[in-house]
Length: 295
Image (cartoon, rainbow, N blue to C red; front, top):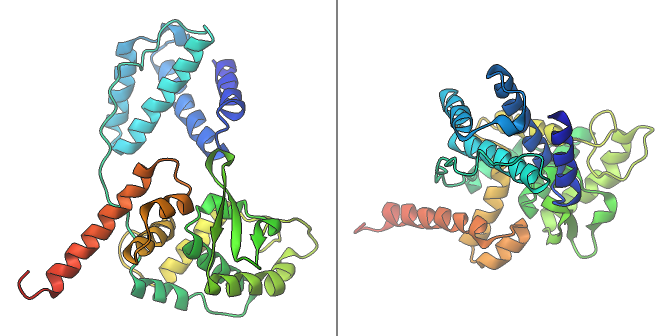
């Protein structure tokens, strides 16, 4: 079974060109299913039947996992078996008829302008790490790039003359994204003043580095943003991805068209971007109710 998983991972890497993060999710989901099979004394993937798949789905619900997580796991296993069927490693796909839970329609959360000001205020400081943190924050808000895309950014990806960055997104798709004056100044200050101090004796082209001088990881960037959010004492459940949501919401609120926002975010489908129109409509509705005398 481990050999089949390895072949599937190679298929995702070479044929599907999936990112390492997506592949890690697939691996985790399949290995979790392997553990379930061991508990059920099932030794071969071809021995798994529809009822076994249903039982696995029930076990996921009993753990009170979110609908999105359960849907992802079922989708991972359906794709895994589809691959095995294609290569004649198994004869049936027990997950083909397993229904996925409908995803929860939750609007993406974003920062209001006063909340952004609070976050920017706690970014102040002249220490190398403070200058770096400011640059990360300004760039994420200015471009809407994912944390994983920020992690992969190299010095040659930045064009200061045009104020654009070359972003390597999901599936290694590339796109150019502009950034404004605040991000330009913060990024330039970091690269010229703080990056060399943080690098110490190391040499590499990754833009953002940790306190040891090594390329920063996505987990490191999330930790920095979480610390800034905590320091700003903002209320509610907040996560770093909200900067991306904020970028899109503020653009649409200020008149940007949906296709442009789609391209800037790197969404393959317009439907992924359309969720932000619901956010802006809700914002308009609340503004209307709060300010119109006859609302």
